[in-house]
Length: 188
Image 1 (tube, rainbow, N blue to C red):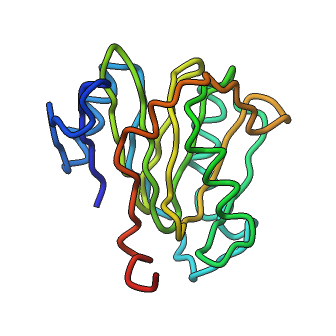
Image 2 (cartoon, helix red, strand yellow):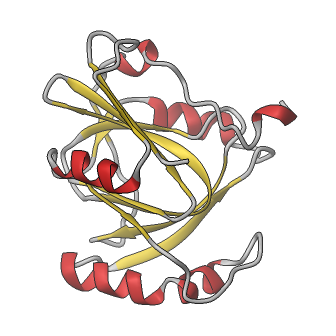
């Protein structure tokens, strides 16, 4: 289930707001410039669909966003609990960073959590299959898919460079609860 939890950035366990309704999540994130939408596939996808099938299923939505925001490249990323580089990738994504490009992700399968630090608050946004999140450039954030990640996401970029981060060096992510993927925790 999609979820938004807002906390002070100095008190990770203090809840200022919790929302699970996608419309309410979109409304709250819009206040900080973050786009959140729900998408439906134009055609049914089988588990483990390849990049071409995923992009075909969401072709209209990808084209709409690309036209509206000038995205020049798109790809599909997939992480599974047995991925050999999952620990290293998780460590990289858990470090607070910014991008000089919007970070746009649409979750086709699985889930993960974006932690957005804006205005003295952290907006922990759990995205699940069907969720699109667009984090504006220069927004401090980190991402966690858990120690046993399971997700497939479409990524959109304004350049062909793809994911390029500028790390802040702040250790804030270490003080926030890590994301535990409910789809894979039983198998741990």
